[in-house]
Image (cartoon, rainbow, N blue to C red; front, side, top):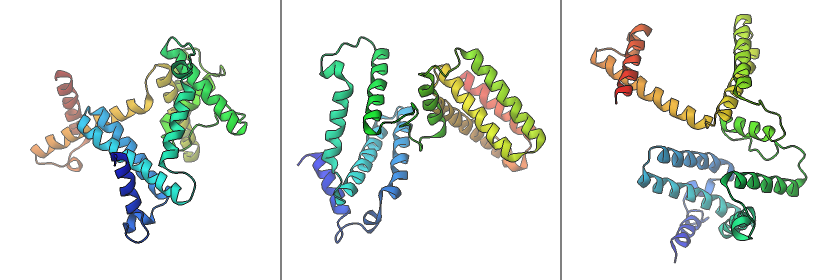
Length: 262
């Protein structure tokens, strides 16, 4: 028995109505979906940390999520794991005609364009979609979805020609945020901050920066520096709430200087 067959057997046993695990038997596509998303992020985290041993484990956890969903679908008579594998094999062959069907593509840029063209044709074949925005998953992280929406719209020419236009838009949105703060309109402010964030995502796209990755890195930087502030305050016999902004800001700058010197 292959390892994948063993994994499928384990999943079947866990879902067995009589001898399986009560928790696993109770799960549905909807209840498992959050775990699937979490495992995908843990794969990304292992990659960011360059930990290949952890990556192996996290990829296994992610694979188990695929097996879990496939098993539940099989129980409903919809499809099984082998159907999932067959579908992705067929899709990869179809979307890489330059590899499997003798078509000529000479660069990664040409392949990216061909890939998107294949996907667009597939969307039309599935249901006659009318918008270039169709097919963008609504449950993507907001920054990632913003970039995908902008990329799709840009293919039609709906895009700033350069960074200057994007920066001007950010300044415009920031002024509108300031205006709503002054007006005290919390509902309008909610919308304007969203538009400011959307414009910032557009800036990242034009600059060739992945907004989600950039923000994740900044989150980690904040986490690291604030922990330094907490540790320094403990040496002084304090907690952050017993300090003040001036003291904590000085320690924050100290953390930044230490990072630059490393």
